[in-house]
Length: 117
Image (tube, rainbow, N blue to C red; front, side, top):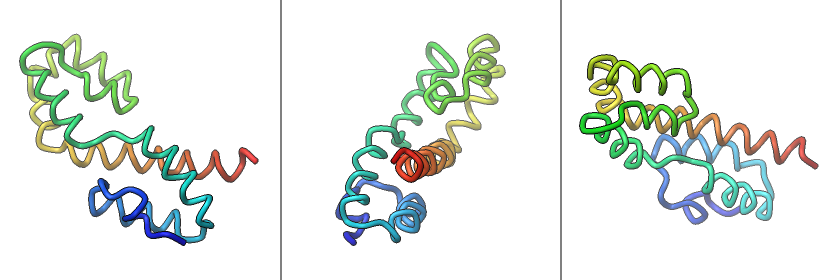
């Protein structure tokens, strides 16, 4: 089994640890397939940071739409990021938002691979 570091070197350390535990029981081909699918679905923390910053100068809530939180995205959009307080919190916690989203996506990819056969 190839190390996840070789398949996806751009992962954050905590995300890499989580993904490594998911990939550990997989064969080499399954791990490559997982990496290919997961890479296309995950969100970079830097993307969430940039879209959160856009909320200060334009459209608030884009980061929430990108993480699949449509309700929160709409709430941020119509309230100016909850009067900028929610946007500031998301700015500080952008890595956590990305990690939580990416963990859900990794779990979905594993389930899709396991039950999609």
